[in-house]
Amino acid sequence: MATAAIGGSHLVASTQAGANYGWQLALLVLAVNILKYPFFRAGVSYTISTGETLQHGYLQMGKGYLITALLLNVISSVVNAAALLMFAASLLGYFVPFTTSIPVLSGIVLAAILFILIAGHYSALDKVSKVIMVTLVIATLGATFMAWQNGTVAPDDFVSPSPWTMAAVGFLVVTMGWMPAPIEISGITSLWLKKQKQEQSVTPQSALFDFNLGYFTTMLLALVFLALGALVLHGADNTLASGGIGFSKQLVDLYAGTIGEWARWLIAVVAFLCIFGSALTVYDGYSRAVAEAAMLLKGQKDTPESIFIVVLSAVAVISFAIVLFFKSALLAMLGFAMTLAFMTTPMFALLNHKLVKQAALNDDVKASPLVTLLSYGGLIYLFGFLALFIAWKWFL
Image 1: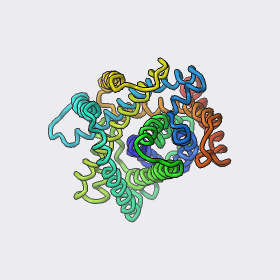
Image 2: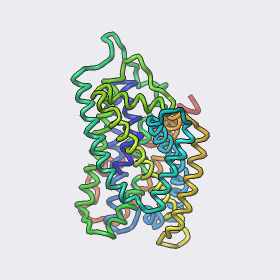
Image 3: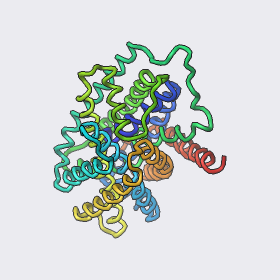
Image 4: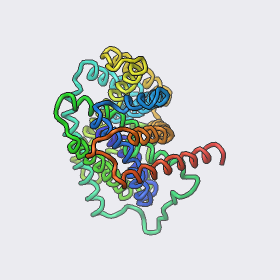
């Protein structure tokens, strides 16, 4: 989950929030992470208690709930996969010494993803991803500390624009859409935990501890990336490029200009592998979730590997077609994916809230009164902000 989270939401959304508005959105980033917590936690609580996935739980509530989740997952799978595919391709372009189009680079990345997943080499990259994530975290903390020591780049007379206007609603939605990750990742986490539970001993206490550690680490890192954007980019003359390769170069420059030129290629490699790992995780997880839901609706509990490969291939073809449509407009593609994620979040949140309320959960993972309160508060916040966004987008 952490690998999926520390990708577009952190490298792009958090950094942009700091670059555009300085520190003003720090509390919003913190609040949206806290208010989404109960709905992500549901994937761990339900699966560790029942041994089944969230999607199995949706089916227990009624076919309509599972069909709703399936339809939302189908849409999210191709859009989110396309966004991360384009991002990974743009970072790959950093290493190519000649001009290459994003579609060509995307084709190379996609071929590598399909080879790894179909050939069954994902476990090897999963181990490497831990090293990649630790390296990126250390580099980001180091860059932020050095930027803090250097002070802000904004001139003394610079006045930050306010994010608390109706004109900024769209940007706020983009910022919150993948924060800390698309909420349907809770269902994918549920799938992974079920598989882990079948292969080794996992206690409710250890599962919840691992989840909490990963979740709150990603939440704090979102604030760190926001700080990096606020210190290095906010008030500066340069604006963020909308093209994929241009934005990727700016992202690497952000680290190199703060830590030192010696770190340029290290950060470029780490950033690429980080986003590549996120893309790999998303293609694998969404495809397995869609395949499982389809099998459950057919009355089959097990999902044959052949069905997973068929779904994976379909997601690959459609997501690549979306990349061809957006071409090199990386930030537009990411913004579209994050906006869509925010619009589907309330429904997934409601499904998870309803499921854990009626399921027989282990005492060690039952929601405390505080988590229950956060759950209700999160629903009010998510549906309320969705209503505001719809009104802003189509009626105001």
